[in-house]
Amino acid sequence: MIPTKYIFVTGGVTSSLGKGIISASLAKLLQARGYEVTIQKLDPYINVDPGTLNPYEHGECYVTEDGAETDLDLGHYERFLGIPTSQANNVTTGRIYQSVINKERRGDYLGKTVQVIPHITDEIKRRIKLLGGRNKYDFVITEIGGTVGDIESLPYVEAVRQLKWEMGDQNVLNIHLTLVPYLKASGELKTKPTQHSVKMLLENGVQPNILVLRTEHELGDDLRKKVALFCNVDSDSVIQSIDVSTIYEVPILMQKERFDVTVLKKMGMDFSGTPDLGPWNKFLKRLHHSKISTKIALVGKYVELPDAYISINESIKHAGAANECHVEVHYIHSEDIDESNYIDLLKEHSGILVAPGFGDRGIEGKILAARYARENNIPFFGICLGLQCAVIEFARDVLHLEKAHSTEMSLKTPDPVIDLMEEQKGITEKGGTMRLGAYPCIIKKGTRTFEAYGLSEITERHRHRYEFNNKYLAAFENAGMISAGVNPETSLVEIMEIPTHKWFIGVQFHPEYHSTVLKPHPLFVDFIKSTI
Image 1 (cartoon, rainbow, N blue to C red):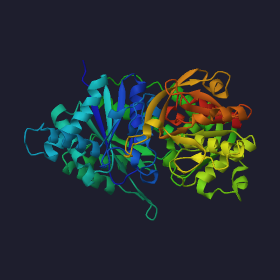
Image 2: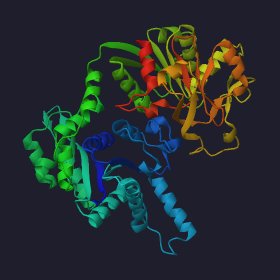
Image 3: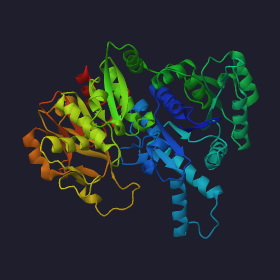
Image 4: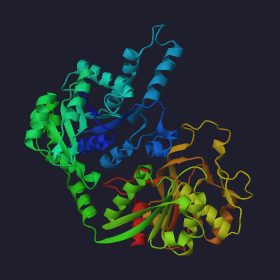
């Protein structure tokens, strides 16, 4: 039996070069050849997970099936591969140190001095191998966050060095992603940053096997040979990663660069044949050759940073392609919406999506957006807090409960139509304490939601503390907003919709976490379809 192969993707020169997309693209190519592949992210920050991080700091917090709050790159992994990730696919420095310190407190180290080497690096290696051994993968691709040279990344780079020494080059491979900047004044592409980045990696004991050069301009053969010579890699191991219009083109470009072939050759694996990317290419064709277009307003309070809603943005692209429709998304800050301007801000759009979030900042703008959609028969999609805003608006304007609110925003509201979940009462810690992960939902037949899913039972991922207050359900349903889906065990309302409306659905869960390139989420598909 061939042992699991481990591939590490490191980055140099600058952050945000796209290590996650390169990792996901390589994984997609290997998967399309029939190999079993998974990807994990090692994050160098000391937070145990990104659950308490401000979206402005770190972008979206992605939630896995088993309830782990993880880095947004795991969303890319799932969207590319169509395979769920788990707690084991994202490891932070905080989690590593927490584990080692807990062992030390229990006396597991038998009184020895606990040090970065070997104890921290051993724990890092254990986490990496745990993922590979658990499911018998052919390849485990591990993306190391940050940039080579950062103090925070040093233990991870050292763990790579040790694994290469322990397991050999055919079982452990390092791919180093760097930037080749273009100096407009001189009209030159400069390789010196790459050379310095590789030198820094070499100083830490790791010789990269493959270099992926991020660039805005085509790299000539001479430049590639120069990089290969100065960085001590084979000439066919210098891969170009040029800027593209969509991340979904990257696997196709990497195939043209024979990226997967180079990796398989170096690891002693079969590289005959070609990856089957037929369905992927069909998706790209639909994405780039839309027959129609539509305008969607995405109302949120983190709209300055698109990464804060990255899974929603990508789900809209998937759904647009499924409908052969170009979706033009306009980001509207919910704090900018008020009674004086909400009509002008929203009237040009064919659909309104109110995004998730926490806290009372911008909440009234979201409520106004829901009101405008409801009163003007404009397709409305509310996700998590978006559902709650739609419920509050309906309670105030239709049920005439003028002070209706969520107890998250107003503890003294006389009509808490959204209230803290029973199991959340008494919890004071914020990290990892929400209702997280996948839960079942029974969908009521005859609803628009059932029509979209074509199923009576689904499973969707959650990340919330507050829920619809069932004490008000009868009043809502009598007035025209019905419960279209409930949790079979707790009777928690998962979906609310207005049957007489063109398309008005709010969900307590996060459907965007289940949308992939080859399997777009049915609610997003139906929502976009309703706006055309």
